[in-house]
Image 1 (tube, rainbow, N blue to C red):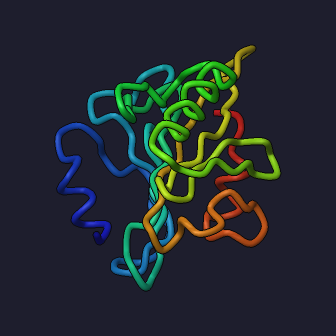
Image 2 (image 1 turned 180 degrees about the horizontal axis):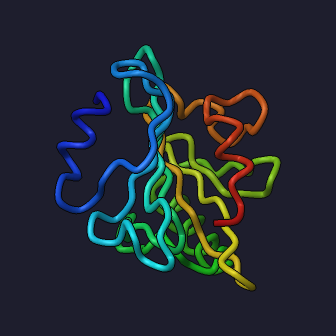
Length: 158
């Protein structure tokens, strides 16, 4: 998926507020809620990452402003990380998926292409899921050798 296709897919719900790179060779973009560009607590709802060889390669959903994403009925966005980790590992075990941990102790399933990161929300820490394409899933838990950009691993506070 190109950036333009991603914009079309979220038209009316999310708007591009920032994009890094030129048309056709974006590396990252931030999407904000369309009706809240000037809100007091505005900021990115979704950050997307592109790979020049495959297009859209990763989607990170902001714990505070992002839309809810579910996996088998489990809400992945804005959850207490320890509780979500228990539900996620139970789900993975039931569906015979491996669970790995990043160097930051984030649970991940390479078969699902899903990393459950943590994001600060004032005095709380909430879940920030990062979903990646199959091309990025191998070693998606690895903060140094995986394909998820270093900037994402440094995102902790918004």
